[in-house]
Figure: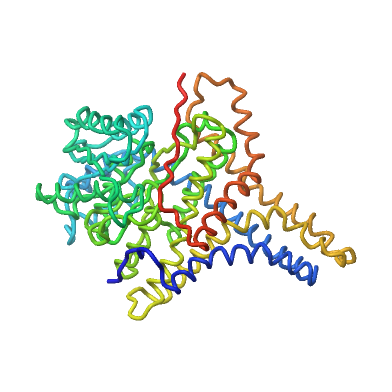
Length: 538
């Protein structure tokens, strides 16, 4: 098995080179059409048209995946996963009664799973032998944020006696959070199999200050508890939540069902849909656009298993987590990085399975508009810091004696590079690319170069069809409008999309460049920027 840890301290020359790669490629891609336009406006025009057509094709695919993903999401939310899970207790008996059940149960996938499980294959166990473990990370959040999360967990359509709740709080956090964690355990502990508040000590050597270290400390406590209770690691699925993550009532049952019916579960992670709509009516317009975009991106990714990665709230079996020594304590992007740790730990035989039941999360909202903008930028910068995995992948995959598949490695590596370079460069090229060739005086004599702005605008207009789909589905997913807002707030929800070009550049591209240049200069993010969470009350 490959050593899966991020290096500590000074990096090797090879590692530093690949840390610089994303910034160099992103800047080069932005400058390329400018340089080409100075050399040959025609060549620059062809390049930009080809680039815009590529994104036009992607936009069509994104629109299709958006509709498809929304269908799966809506269907999964309406499914009674609790009943499906109960069927697994005695699959043979359930098969005999399916014909007399409601039509929603005569589904092919459930029927196939019951047939498979009725044969008692190796690795099969009953739901009554299974436990959902939920780790909630807490730092400085108020009870107004955390209470609804815990309430949502216990409002699940699931047998709470099969639930283990661990609230991981930080010793460096405010004392009120220490008290809150213990009060929540006292309040809800009797309603589940087991609950505990676990304090993560501060100033542990070789740890980045952040969520990864917190949940790893809580996970270590959980491992000890499972051993004491003689509960097999393979019978436990661990979901990690932020303090504002509220699972849909069917999430726990759905996750349990997917896990139990997956006989290759020890080489899997399970990724629910993240929907940033808890407080969507309260957030400022630019933050609403970003939150909605992030929500739909997780829906789209769920329809592309080859690109699906651990993100935000995610689940993994304890047996699998033991193989990776839980999560990384050396990065601020422990979620996405967990995919790469696991992929190398399992020698490339590891996948992420989508769960189409959502985890509802908060859009960025701080006490003031200025603080909200700052918090939003820091959140996107942290996500974009996943570019640090490029050097990590190169270090682990480009070495003698590697144990991961050659073509599998290169496909993932190039896709990872493309993702982060596109995140930084594409908003700028798509927005301004049509005007670049005309900076050369010779372009005045080129019909194609002069027509490029109009061609670009036409392609962008057609690509906006995908945006119309997003807007339509956004209104279908919105939670009820709070009584404190008038109907005109609905108009704001529509007009907000005018901010999209601005947010994609000022937040998306800027955050990506910030993270990439930090890596380029070796100024690493060594502290998790906790996103401010404010609550607006009636």
